Image (cartoon, rainbow, N blue to C red; front, top):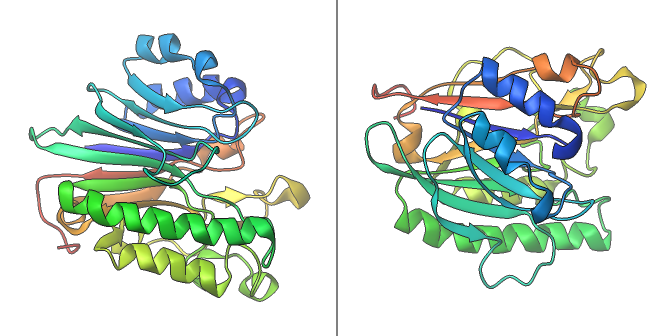
Length: 266
């Protein structure tokens, strides 16, 4: 089973990229973020023609999340229950894995926070706390669960191209990193860090100042999985190829492969 996440920074603009990537990389499920289109504009027919079921929570101009799956999706949940938030940042659904067991997937577009100390930063930390509280119950109900998305947090200095330049700033501040660790403390594993990885591997590069060409990036897109599911993870990689396409998203897909054989993640 292959699970992937990709902040496409406008599905309307990059639908062709998504379809091309899925044709070359027929993953079992793909979580998308930053759809930037309302529900009625979601291209479900084009995705269905490509062999994917879909559920989504759209929003005009901003935000929006979706899950694409080769098998039908059920028990769909939009947003964090009980958390009053007009921004569409969460969608969850269950699918049947290759071994017949149910797998719970969550596509998450976590707030950026804008600047440390700002109102949007306070909202980000509050949102992460609400996410943690909800996930605690979700994990108890769904032993095989993965939450994939743009977390807008680089967990360690290893995930930052220039730690000194970014020190204490947005996406790397101590409270943000603690919020990420709080999720891991629920029993989730960062699948990318289960394996030896090439140094300076990132998933986001600023459009400005030739960020991608200089590999001046951050690793802020993550696939976290419950321990039971992570025990079957065989590989997790960042596919930089689409970032080099014409008019790309500023993010690249992250892909985790799960198999029946236990690995060092156990």
